[in-house]
Image 1: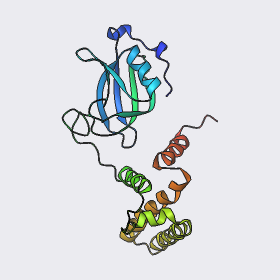
Image 2: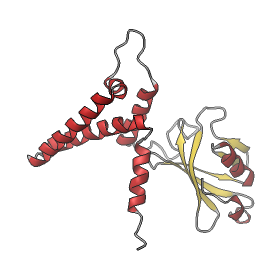
Image 3: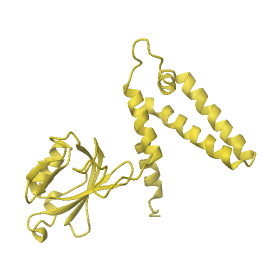
Image 4: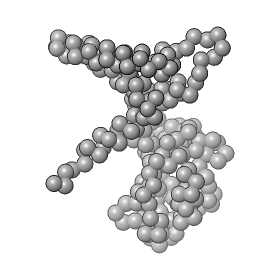
Amino acid sequence: MKLDVAALNFDKGQGLVTVVTQDARTGDVLMVAHADREALERTLSTGEMHYRSRTRGLWHKGATSGNTQKVVSLRADCDGDAVLARVEKAGPACHTGEETCFGEGRWDALAHLDATLAARADDSARDGAKASYTRRLLDDRNLRLKKLGEEAAELVTACADADPPRAAEEAADLLYHLLVAIRPLGLTLEDVKTVLAARAQPSKG
């Protein structure tokens, strides 16, 4: 959370700065609110978003609803009077029940898949219940690595055959098996995106 609260310009907003809260997984803008020094210090100390409302005062997002927002990063804008908060949300951001305060959020298939894999990783097969395919892969290192290799080979074949529809299907299968393969290493889609983002930075050389 790279944020120097002391460097922010609270005077411009009569003690407040604007906070734009964004879903770190999908990129959706979830809400726009305000925060004062105390709210941001609470956010930094707890790791969950706190805001300041002119009517409600200091409030911890999700304290009553359970729809908390775990902070991924906090960055000030160039003028120091606004903060971009990237978060992982535990539920809808809007009091109306919508995913965002601007209506339905963008459905990100990869983020949805990653969240599903996280749920499967946390679940264990119930007594007498047949384990899901994902659970079987997560429990069997040799099986998941074998399937990763098979899916990669099938994509290569589809590309070699110049078969776009089959290549798209095989690419989707490969992405699924890739995310399953890295999860036992403690890695998620967000880790992959972080590497890609770093590679996309302009070269200083």
